[in-house]
Length: 539
Image (tube, rainbow, N blue to C red; front, side):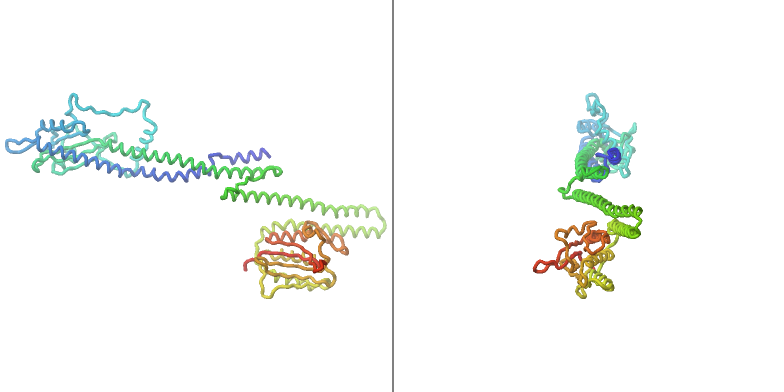
């Protein structure tokens, strides 16, 4: 038994990896996909930051172009004005110091006059960049970079033009510069070979509305990238925290559901494979939830199974005892008939043998009917049965037989006494009680069958004028194989299962049956009364 139980539980053991835990984790984690999907829609945020940076470059460019137009211009001999490269470079060096912006100035012919990248010279500004940590790239940075690759790989991301810088730059290399030379400011976003964004803004350099050149300011979008990465880090941190809380809550939820279910399953296995009643189903009815309902149902089912097993065990013992009595008598008669030679004694012994065989046949038939009764009652479909009409039909059939007591039925005319049940089995109960009353009633006596409604039940009574029931035996008469027959009746003509079967049928119909003695005002017994109560059915 232990090996069988161990093998059965081993095949079902899952622990924290149970499918229930997985399902709870999966369902709760699906909610976290909402902010994760939101990470993919930060592009609008990045575009707004880019627009802000371009606006800032535009403001700086306009201020710088106004200074250039007023201080770095000289008139030629023919009266034309143009930008002076030397003054332009000097002004550029003074105004763009430490602002992190690269400036290039182009003439109206497209020639680049100055580039702030080459103006610093010795002692000029030095580009500073952070080195990676000594241990290399951290795990969080790797996750973010991997995520960035996925985001950039997804469709719908902006495909920026590639930034190329020619050795001899001219206005033709930059679309925004050409637009600025026509008198309109223009901005552009490009991406270099490493994937970094380069922002540029070109504004016209004017003096009295005359375009003298174009100023192009450019910078990388590191500020934008860092802002977007910070936002993604914040969202990922919130998602990570939410994931941790979700996992803990899911495990807790799976525990308060899975552990009781596992205990119930293990207890059911112990009951199934164990011996005796040392194991019982855990009681979780105090939970007042579905698991508590399941626990209560399993406990009730287990108690019903034990009760059924007790009933089967008792039934088997009673059957063995009842069959053994006629078999013992039959064996004694058979052994005796072989030794006697008197024809009268042989005839008497053969009569005993015949009676014992008939008794065994009757007993086995009643036992077979009783053993099939439960299965039939559980499988058959209940239907509406009019008890009043059923009683009238049974009395009408009984009145055909002459002799013995008379039968009468008392029901209200036009009243329906409908119950949900099996007409054949209910008829069997009434016939058993009528036969029982007929056995004990005197010659010329009266047996009355009546029916009436009481609250939600139909109550049927069967009265006889016999000697009544022995005091203290009002409940015992419904036990299996109980027999208490008139003295003049031949022994062994009844198996003692009739009232037991009747009680079993009535209880299967959710009804009750009981026996009482009818008495007059002086306390004298007038006869026996059987009372059956059945719930009213639907018409």
